[in-house]
Length: 157
Image (tube, rainbow, N blue to C red; front, side):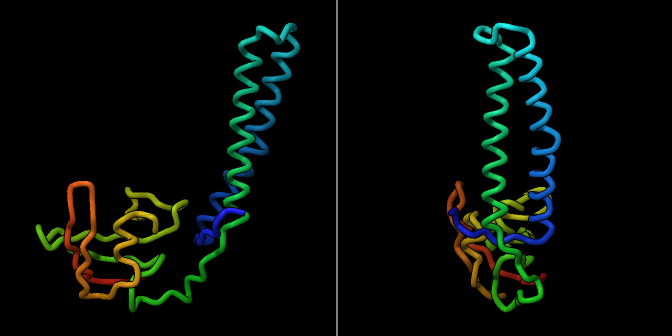
């Protein structure tokens, strides 16, 4: 079994909804395409059949991966999260000491990361550097362009 991943209830619901869609909408559609390709006769040189079989293989792999993720997901009890130091599901405000730019990120599981929404994966260098730190701490975080010192300004939910 893969590693356990912590996820919010909302994140788990999204994964379950996606799995449901793959199994009840996409799987039957591909089966239908395969059936139609077979009805056309000789499948040894039938590009439609080959394409549908490839799509079916990829879909089944996607379903298996999603099932695995759902099986290893553990819901995070948001009421047990404290803000004395940085941990998953915290909203962290950090200030780049070099240019005084302030950023705010929510640290989430890998499955829920969405940079546009300000949600960064716990697996990112920034999140790893912030974990366990407290307000006022200065953290050196390696980014592709070098190392940037960030000060933790605020930790909230």
